[in-house]
Image (cartoon, rainbow, N blue to C red):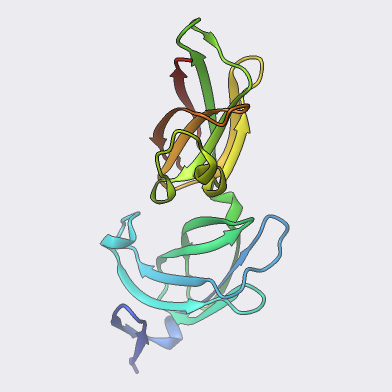
Length: 217
């Protein structure tokens, strides 16, 4: 006998026809870098339709993690699903989680994910245009695009930055930043706090990317 089960979310309701005898189960847990569960994070479950982007997928269910950082989606058809969590915060940084999970008939899939794994490595290489040499002791701020505000002196942006660094002797600052987000990369004088230059970037999970920048001073 086929049983129709309706999953309800604030965005839309999707009816999924399911044979319980052929279904599998899914639990999903979010943790910080130390394995501590992240509570009250909204997790969305999508039929991903072979698309990475949630906007091209069908929303099936939305739930919030419990005190242990876990949600239980119960019985699901055996297939691959897209999990999206866009408000998982660790150390005041919002990480965007997009993860595929496979549900198998007669099995319970217990997936645990460290949200900080959704990061990439940004290698910022800074050159002084005056000398055409690597510039050491230059401050680097990584700021969410929506939080960036141009200013001659960077007091507000210093507070809004999610990641910070300073270039070494080789003019390089290496930062591990959240993936799947648009950022402003701001260079500044660490003594005067003056804005030297800025640009935009984003990075994919697990990627290492070079970012070249320069300034006149």
